[in-house]
Each structure stands twice: as structure tokens, then as C-alpha cells.
Length: 408
Image 1 (cartoon, rainbow, N blue to C red):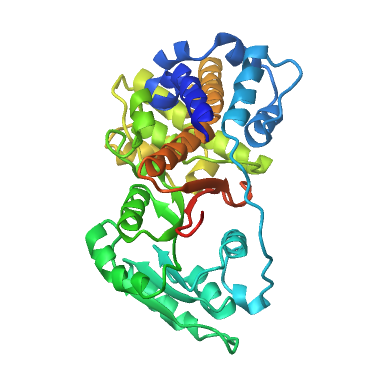
Image 2 (image 1 turned 135 degrees about the vertical axis):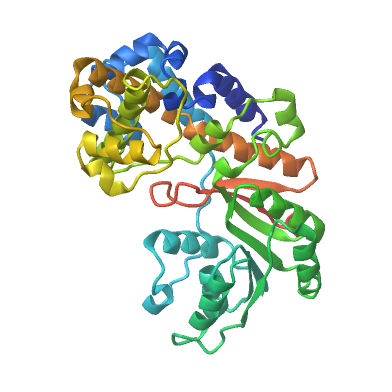
């Protein structure tokens, strides 16, 4: 299952390899040759609101080139993963969700409604244990939280008995451990899982970067049912922590830090004001890069890091002054005149259009990573499933890999 989709996804991503591998900011103007001219011309001539609808809602105007329609259609088709529908709805009292965000509540609800036939939940990277607390207090399942952050553990312990508990609530315990020390985690969990009659369930919501791979290594040694969600793919090593499966190694899709960072992006259904702010951030950064190259004569790309959100609400000149000061550089011409010139406005608009096209590859890259992990586990004779659990608009990292030990 998924073999055909995975190979088609590889062929699609391989076709747009240069776009995925290279961030527009670092590779402009050379990267212009990687983007179909008719796509760029089309996007340059639609409104900002239509750009937003394309990026956030995947809505195209009637005048879109057929090749671009095919691009967007293939993305939707090749990233399709079955949605897991809830098996049982658990209705909990309002205080159960106190200080839990709407996003986190949605995630927990979808998980507990699908996975509740266990006698022990092991919450890996569980922080203060919000998910475990729901399982223990309201589903009457013992829980164990594993995390490396002592402050989060201490906060979790304080919250355990803060609100009224049902009479049949079960205990919740915390253990400090770092998931990247696989053998240490396994040694701490082995006795616990063995004493629970093969009904332990290990949860990873979400395992950041390479911690997802460590999560699978722990489960391989314990042979325990699990559910894992990945995130922060930009923290993966592009040379050693992707293309894990044999089928993926055969394809050998090329990766870069930029491609992995793109895989983490999701602005699904963002509102128009957020899109406008993102556009402004990008245009300021593009224009500053052009200012450094063309006015200061520095051709080497300079990494600025992240600027405060408030800085993007000020004039371009103020933005330039702050960032050049951080680089020990000085202004030699008026940044406002530079920014408002017709040439620079055209250039930053083109760069943003290229970025819009590139952003669409985010979901295909993420699905490729997760299907690679799926096949990696299948090749180890682990009968894993892959499903969408959450609404993407609420929780973009919504694809889970699950395994049930006693499932036939």
C-alpha cells in the first residue's frame, strides 16, 4: 500500500528538485530559471487577494495556465492520506480542558477517541502531561510521562490534582529522560511495559526532528503499540535522517536544510491579514538583501536571523537601520527611495511570486518524509498504519503513524 503514491510523489518532487532545495532569498536571481515563465507571468497579474486564496485555500482563477493547474492538482492528489474517523466520542467536563489551547484540545480529543483500549499510556516528550492527565483522570488509564524538561515535569505534577477528579481516575507518573538516549529510555520502560500484559501504548505528540527516529528505535526494542506525529523537519540532518527506507534510498531524493524547513511550513486556511503581514515580512527582507548587494556592494549573502514582529510595522528605513547596525554596516543611500523605486518593487514582487510557487511543495515534502518512515517501519516487519488524525487548519502536523501489537 502507498508504493505507487510514493513513487509518483518522488517523480513529482524530483521534477521540481531545484525549487525545493533552494530558498528564493539565498538563490535569487539565479533561481528564476527554475520557475516556469508562464506561471510567474500569471501570478504577477492576479490580485493579492487571489494570491492569498491560492496559497491558503488552493483556489485558482479561471485564467490559470493548464500546467499550473496540473501542478496544484497533482499536489492535492499525491498528498492524500486517509482520514481516521473517531471510533468513540468521549465527552469530558469543561474543567478537564482548563489552560489547554483549542489546538491541543482538538489533538487530544482525536487521539483519545481513537485510542483508548490500553491499560498504560506512555507519553513520550509529554511535557506537563496534558494528554496523560486526560487519559488517567477521565478514561481511567494509567499514564507515564517521559520528558527531559524538569520545569515542565514539575508543572505537570502540580496540575495533576488541581481540579476535581472522577472516583475511578488512575495514577499519572513522570520520569525525566532524554529520548535521544535510546538505551536509557528503553531500560526505564522495559519493566513497565512488560508488566502491562502487552497493552501499553506509547504516544509521541509531537516528536521534534530526529526524536521521531529515536521514538521508533525505542519502540523497536520494546515491541509496543504506538502512535507518532513528527514535526520540526528543519532540525533533521539532510544527509542521514531522511531517505531511511530501502525504497527511498533507491529513489534517493535530494534534500537540503531549506527543503526540510519548507516541509514544516503550513499556512492552510490562514486569514488575509496574516497573509498580508507575511507578504510584508518577505518583501522587507528581499529588499534589504537587494540593498546590501546593490547599494553596499556586498554580494555575499548575509544571514540576519529573525527580526521582532514590531519592526515590520515600521518604515523600511527603520528596518534597514536596525538590521545594518546588527551587521556593523552603515547606510550610504536613502533606503526609502531604494525600496519605493519601480525596479525594486518589481523585483520583490517577483521574488514573492517565486516563493508562493515554492511554498506549495511544503505538503508534498512532508508527506514524502512520513511515507519514507512508513516504509522504513514496514521493512522492519512492523505493521504500521498512516492516517490523518487532525483538521489541518487547526493542527498542520496532522499525520500519524500507528502500530498495534496485537492487531491481526
